[in-house]
Amino acid sequence: MNFVFFSPHFPANGADFCDRLKKAGATVLGIGDAPFDALDSKLKAALSEYYRVADMEDYEPVFRAIGHFIHKWGRIDRFESLNEHWLELEANIRTDFNIYGTKLDFVKNLKRKSRMRAFFRKSGVETIAQRKCSDRAGAMTSASAIPWWSNRTQAPALRTRSRSPMRKSSTTSSGTSRRM
Image (cartoon, rainbow, N blue to C red):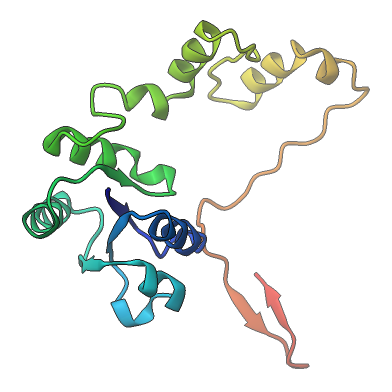
């Protein structure tokens, strides 16, 4: 089995996944943006080959990497990552190279929670009510329909956070680090 692991270095448990695949007899091939020398030693040992791309968001180099792997290793049996961010890229690659798994015509059902809900219901799995809200009033109205929420004596204040995923750190005069 030829298994291409996209972004094997992130999240970090990708190394364990690749290691187990190799131990199960798979040929594990990796595509990522990290330099090979920066990869975890367990990950390096698990990979039969690693193809570095400068930008994982750029489809063309990923497409070329798969072409290279097929030329060198033969048919690709699986193309996966452990990151939801790559669902659409994975589906594109699987569609273009006819690799087993979720294809482009179905991936929207996994990316949109409202579509996922229909599949859960079809399978007999209960889901909670959902409502699309764009402001606090809509959110509070929706929340008031939930029994455990509406029985609360006082609704907690909604917290707002910075949209930036990065937080700055600074060092105080005593040398301790703090979040900003």
